[in-house]
Image (cartoon, rainbow, N blue to C red; front, side, top):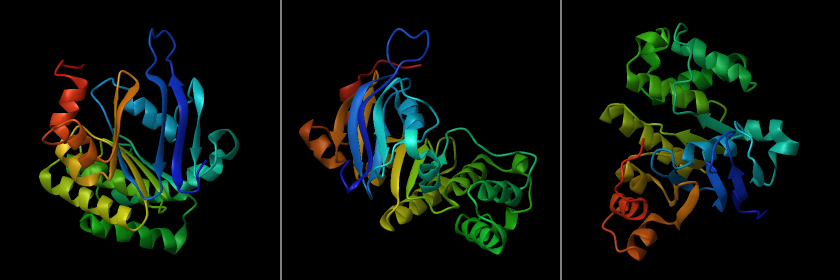
Length: 249
């Protein structure tokens, strides 16, 4: 494990029970500290499986993963404190208020009392939700739910943040606010690992990307370099060139 690596993945394999082919097929790559790293791929390519393994939610069939030099096998609790997770599904209690949801999540991370309340209000203000803190989540719009979902993953100032489709299905304004805050966090030192189907957004945000298809990494590097190497106009053009035009379920 290199000192500058936030994450190091070696020969990672995941085969689901009853599946004929691996969801993740012997992939290896490293993500340096401070990268804004995009893991991109078509539906069913293996990116959500890979992200789930990297953040400790899913056990691999084989292979090794190191987070800041630590392995989940020996240092799970220590790793949990240094990572934040923003899942694709809205992970909130719809019958609780925004503040109650964030208070619950903060307690799980060991935040309490005045410190937690201040942090919640700080985040709600940044994302334009301070006036809605006492409203039930079930009354929120899709964009508001996405913003609260993100706040829940960053309350404890994670060193590494995992995001699975954080801006899917939301309005332009919410997407802009989320993107700007992620860029700000990254500039301040947070390593970000992110999946998205929005290629223009990924090209603007990511310092490095890997494209995964059929469980294999088929490209890895800086977006501008990959676009140039494959004589493409932009990331979307490169993505289609490498993964094809066939529709995916």
